[in-house]
Amino acid sequence: MRIKSNWFKSGREHTPQELAGAVAFVVWRIADNALKNTRKANFNVEIGNQYFAFLNEFLFFLIQIADRIAFRRLTQEARFAFTSTLANRVAETLAENQNRLLGGNRQESKQQFIDLLNQRADDYADFDYDEDGPSFRFTRYLGYCMNQVMSEKDSGWIIDQMISIEAPGAVEMVEKTLRDLLETGPRSPPRHRTTVAGD
Image (cartoon, rainbow, N blue to C red):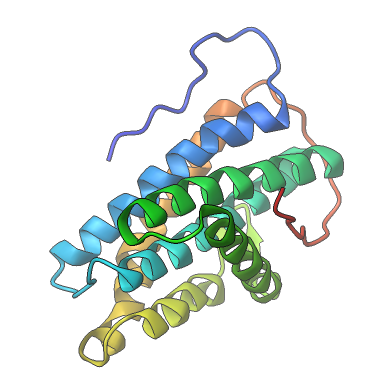
């Protein structure tokens, strides 16, 4: 999958919110591509609730990846603004697509996404992510969450599909996107888990 990871106009520093907007588009494409790849690999992901449950889990994973990279590169304040905006943009896209196909209330769907994202963030906070990327436990947790999404026939195999195939490529794309977009961006410290609120 090819992604565009450079600003159309360079020469100025972009706000965390602008950065999040660009990353939200890429993250959505990566998750959608992972779903297509998984279905091509003969995993049964039915259109409907299971389809969106898969997207939810992969998007939660990608948002955590983006947040860990932001931790390395942004100030605490900028990181919070980036991750909050990213989560809300992704939640809006997910809710729009879900309600177009399944109906329901978009605001409720968005809030459900944010609430579950915060639960997942608590769990992912226990796993390491360094300059070499996520730890084995980090990606294995994605596999565990996907295992809950899949049917009994596929549940034993989905963990390996996530750890060996989908997660590494997705992490590489998010790393590259943020590296390119942050070329002239600020760098710095503190490490606290970020909780996101729906707006």
